[in-house]
Image 1 (cartoon, rainbow, N blue to C red):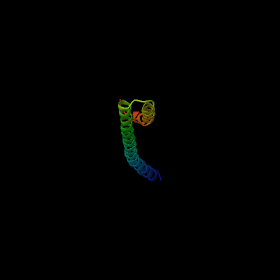
Image 2 (cartoon, one colour; image 1 turned 135 degrees about the vertical axis):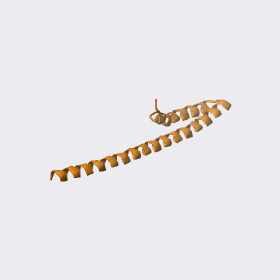
Image 3 (tube, rainbow, N blue to C red; image 1 turned 180 degrees about the vertical axis):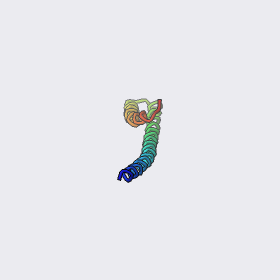
Image 4 (tube, rainbow, N blue to C red; image 1 turned 90 degrees about the vertical axis):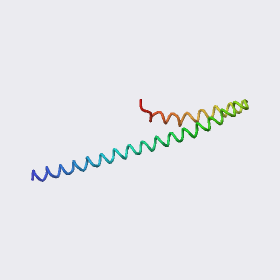
Amino acid sequence: MTRFLTTTTAIALGMVGAAQAQTSTEVLDTYANIAQANYEDSLSVARDLETAITALIYAPSAETRQAARHTWLESRVTYQQTEVSRCP
């Protein structure tokens, strides 16, 4: 009986180790996919911000200033989401 339990325990631990390795890979893949999506979103809103700032430079007015400010505030949200992905 002891030998059976030892064998069963060894098999179970081996299976858990393999499952953890796969889980770690899946977690890293998911993290990478999320980071890439965040950077793509940040790039998109950065381009929108560039357009709004260009409009403000070439046609300064209260409206273009407000549009640039609004776009900047919106861009901060996606930019801040990328900060967690940076390594020191």
